[in-house]
Image 1 (tube, chains in turn green, purple):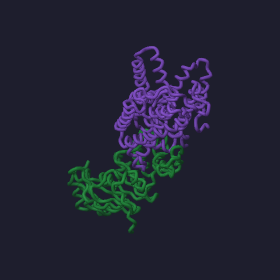
Image 2 (tube, helix red, strand yellow):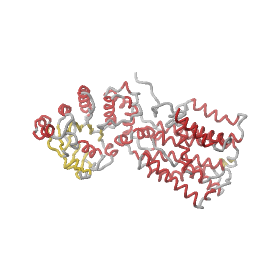
Image 3 (cartoon, chains in turn blue, red):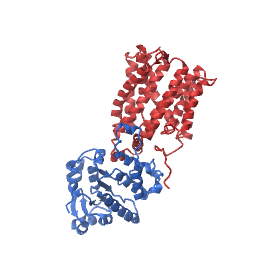
Image 4 (cartoon, chains in turn orange, cyan):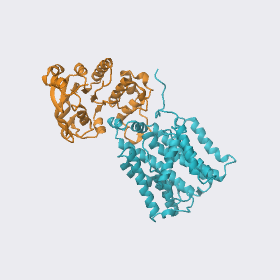
Length: 253
Length: 317
């Protein structure tokens, strides 16, 4: 099964002053798979995501998405090409309702958006928005202000926002951060199921090995900004370098 | 009609329209009411920026003043059509706001406020210290603008109705705007600018758009003001006027549109009434404002928290 390559990261390096956060990282993500990037704290995972999503311009290397180069493009441009991102620290619109949160995300894809009539028209996105809220069990909370949701609900809302922009590739940055083990299990299953039903490709950053092993098709391991291993979860679990990095290397909370 | 404005709104505007028929409305009161409603409209325009997009402009007096000078320059040359005056104000203020907006929206928070202030101070300085537009005296003794051939805006009652009409149209426009897709995105930008970018919105474009709309509405108010006052002076552009606009929005209530209209009218009436009794009226006004901020921090009309940009539909069963 050689599916089409959706995202290609080619020799990406990123330095902040003297600190090399990423050094020559390359990997390909194929259509429909769940690809995970793991590594100890400070391995460069979030920097890698920020380079892909347009927050940072890499020092060298390129990122190709859907056949076009996206290196150094602005986040909003990259998003419009079909790449959506969730954040490790919950990043929602706190002072408006849950429903309005998802509406404003969904509306970024209606044809009227960005055109003059958007000054007076209200696009109807109720169908897809309610469907998303339903999928994440947030229907009953639709009129609640987003800031009043529980942590777990906010994590789900975060994913709803990204999904509402109808991406082909979804970047999830530690989606289960701060969840209890039970919540983590449910969330992992839900994410997997939604990705499959929507035909999404997932690129996942995780800290928690157990989450990754359950849902990933392939895993890459970062350590001190370098990729030290890549392969199916079973192979990664037994890789000597990976075990060394996780057990003998930097701290792990 | 009711989708445009609920019946309460129509009642309020009908009452405003009926006001001149009441016996106690002297010419003085009519002109005072003009000022109250006009500055209410200005505060409402500023609310689009402050309350919805979360951008504090410290340079709205420049938009107002440029609108006033647009009228003054035309009236001085004997071009009396009010519509041309308003048209010129849209062009001049729009062009200036485009430049200010381009630079100011590239920066956030305090830098946006500072850049709008700096641009406004430049405009003030040019009008105040060069003789191109009459220097510190401005342009005085203007004739009244003409609405239709033979119908001049020369009586208090006509002037009053002009501002009521302006307020109605501007309010309807703002109301439609904040409920539109554009308005939704503005609120999202206020709430979390970075997240809006990651949802595919070109944030700067939206900010520039709302700057332009807010500035043009303020400029139109300035153009009307010069028609009523028969002058345009650099004092209209002084930074303290921008500060007063911000205070009007704050005492009325951010992000409510109606609140700032009330705030602007309240401020003008308070200023006028207190200054007719004592010379140190700004102290009295200051105390009143401090009390409002302490005891009604969300403004006269801002008690409702969690501003809702979209009309609430029935909760899903």
